[in-house]
Amino acid sequence: MKDLQNLVYKFMEKEEVTLKQALMQSSLGACAKTGDLAEIARGVIYSGYPYNDDRKKRVAEHLGELLFYWVMLASTTGFSPEQIMAEYISAYIQRTKIMTEDEFRAIKNREKLIQEDQKTAEASILEMLKYVKAQEIQQVQQVQQDKKLREQVK
Image 1 (cartoon, rainbow, N blue to C red):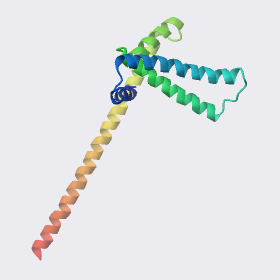
Image 2: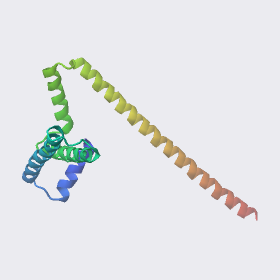
Image 3: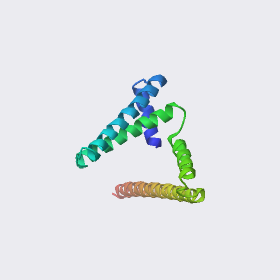
Image 4: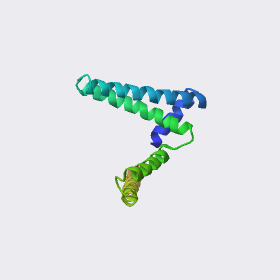
């Protein structure tokens, strides 16, 4: 989500979008994309259109744009998308009793552990790359040193 939020900020900066314009564009854009998705669903459900690759592609495009507008709206109204999702999920769980808060916390803890493992793996890869680069530099230096010694011997 942070990547998308950064993209939204870059878009707003590049296009010199004011807060008022961002609120209007994100609100109306989200409504328009929701309408586009509803139109596709209506066509498939009531008109019998096939849910083929073309429609799947259009659904994905509209969902992507809807997500962009949603993040823009959240950001311009002072919320982080993660905060909104966490609060919604918690309220949804309480309302539907689909799972307990403890089960939800366990899922979030697993996700956090996975993210920490991923960060650790990324850090390990970076350390390995640094080590390999240092070894390459050391080898180049050794070759240069050997070359100088050979030249001195001649």
